[in-house]
Length: 338
Image (cartoon, rainbow, N blue to C red; front, side, top):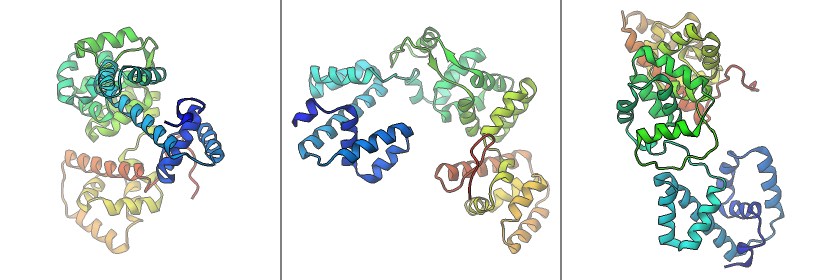
């Protein structure tokens, strides 16, 4: 093994060599997840690298792979499980070195085991618990799981749970540990003694983005009565069907190409004139006339069908935004320069 791998190279130097080895495309994707200050430091470090020894590069790639595998093992079954697997593969000392290096900076999120569970199973356990306990569990689950569970809760409980998630700041490790022990007898992760932050506005926005339109409306309507300021803050950060009026024309044209005509006709059947105008002005004259005629002859429609159509359209819009094909300006966000 090259001399520099064992000693003499800083973590930043190793990171620079790793990024050089991975190539520009992969490195560019990694940079998207770093802070500006980290990008500047690594860019400077990369610029200072004149030549990468093959043996040194292979050793750093191997070290990186071992750390990634260790993190994966910790996620699967906790630190003890990771240590056992690494000892069998690399020997006791090497395993201990990797675990020590990881645990110095790694905090394993509570409820890891629950994030692999069926939402229906979790619901069976927590549906009769108090709203604060349900909010705590949902804050740590994946947004998709929490959305399904929140949708399945009784309506009178949904808004209260949503409110508690939004207002949650930090929870003591003792409380988290106690709830974990009840939810799963054998913990899959070690709870640190630091206060763990979960919940908050962003957490409930992600969860509400995944529920059906009816549940979303029920929760927001109830929150508007209970806590109007909180409801307004949540609505600023999430996209609902009516927000189409705030999207630029080019993006609306892109959205129209990706959604079913039947869904759009249903959604527009009860939409405001402002929403209809935003859609129709981005269609050809012929398409707009056809849509208006077909909507006129559609007759009465069920509210549930309309809400389901709007939910599918919003899901398409969120997918296009996540892929970078459209940009949505939200309340309080940065101005968009076209």
